[in-house]
Image (tube, rainbow, N blue to C red; front, side, top):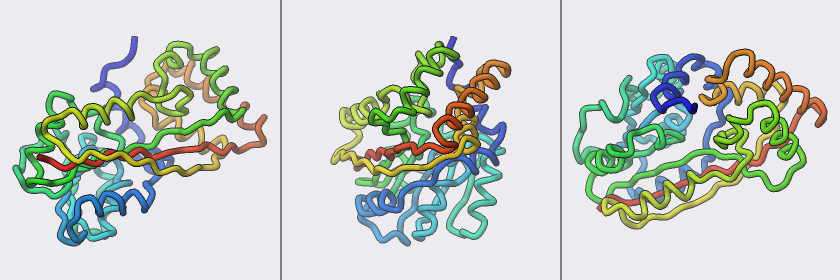
Length: 266
């Protein structure tokens, strides 16, 4: 049986330092897109971040001068985020979920969520996000995904997952992302059909990462669905992944894309 959302959210704080080390940052071109869509000088923008994690996206916007209130429900993740943003007086990290956060109404030019929108209660997120935004303010949702195009290593990974962890494989985990994701279309449709948003646009920023076996396994260990596997099963799977990458020369190139949804509040 698949773990529930709350259980998955809680595991992220188990090794916040590993998450910070293994997870990728965001393309500067994506930050450019978001700020251009906001249409306000970056130093004048006040932003609310949902699920800041260890501050990967937070820093990208803070470096541009954006004032940020960053919400993170995991105290361990928030502590790392505070350390990473220590040099930015324009960042405040609060340990809370978006659902529990006391609303500051019409107080932000930008609400953004980096790989976290799907963790927020669907009954809450759109309404509360628009309530937090000034009229015509911007919602920006973005996340990384793998972008395989028939690479042999992808086929080998799929066979390994199908054989060793068939239940996990059937749930189509986001990483290594062996099956096409539905989240792009689902989130785009959610925002495009909402009466709370207008001017919806989507963009894709493509990039690639060359990963050693250690780096690939560390990235797997930041995935909640992998962390929640029985310990023996997880160890066997990660050992097999290491051998597979060794068979491919010790490092593999993983194609990625960062998908971005932008919209204005009505």
